[in-house]
Length: 122
Length: 367
Image (cartoon, rainbow over all chains, first blue to last red; front, side):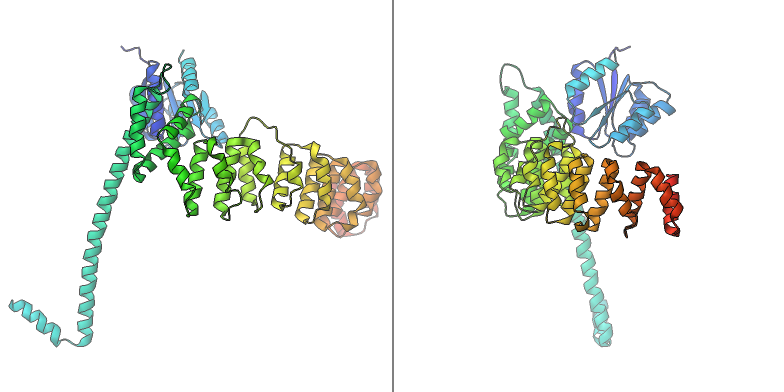
């Protein structure tokens, strides 16, 4: 069995996804990218990742719904980091209430994200 | 041939109205066919364009990521980065490709910070994209100029400050708004210096947007707002009053007191409101002595101020206004008396025969 830890990244900005994929794969993680919440849920169910990174605002299924699905439907305690933009403070609180473990406000530093990912996957 | 002849004969022998109807039907039919063909062409062209955009997006996205990760500590620009810079520079001359490259840069710049964000800005300079945006500032079309300024704001390009400041008093509101957002987003409170030279009106919406941007910053030390409180531009004074309240600028109390005699009523009312918020007791006596000369809105605002700064010496003044014709003033006067001298309040209540007053007393007793 492979030791590589899988991370599902749900983000509709494809350039940001690609950038984070490169950065996190350099750190030895396997990135599975979803462009919306629907794809994210499918990837989570298929691959059972060790960590989930999700944007709050996404097409079809929002980040909040992804968190709710993982915590309430799949009953998993997979660590979740939420990305939020300025003005989404209330959404972040909702994300924490639903079971998110951490959040990063956009714009964020990819290096800081790596530190947080490592801390959660320690 | 025979059937054609039959149709022609039928048409020629028909009454005029039938001929007109047939002609029109023919014209419409041809029109529908032409439109259908045109729509099909348009749709296929749009799909082609969409495909092309998606292809370019993928290509530039990958170039951008390669550029960001191709840097090394030894060289300022690595060979791999130089190849990408040259490629983007040549693509930037095509407007269609340039818009895709810029949109990719902007989208990523909005989402990331730190070294990578600096690298994106560097690429914007190196690929010559900045020159195209600067060219936009010289356009005669206002929306092109506005979009150019917005691009600089989103990419945090501080170096073009001088080129942008010249638009501070531009007749088009949209351009002025973009300039203001550029200055405040990039230079924070220092960016507010445009208020020194602003001659046009700063709308309520503009003010809200500027305050919203300012609240995002960690540093909350604001420059001296005294000159703006004394500005000849009333909208600048109104905005400075908001700043004084939000950032608790007690040190400008003298300028605020001066505004009590401002020519515009709204400013005087706002000044009382801010003085009340800052608990400037000196303002109370000035307003009290001049109470009868104040407008009704100022009088109401003054009573709201009294709620915060009343003293026992205000009792007679308050009692004199319990019968004021304005309901709000009457209510506020009684409300303060209830706190200041409950026995006087009870006396007033016991001697009152007016039903309206009884209702006010009962309301105040229960609240």
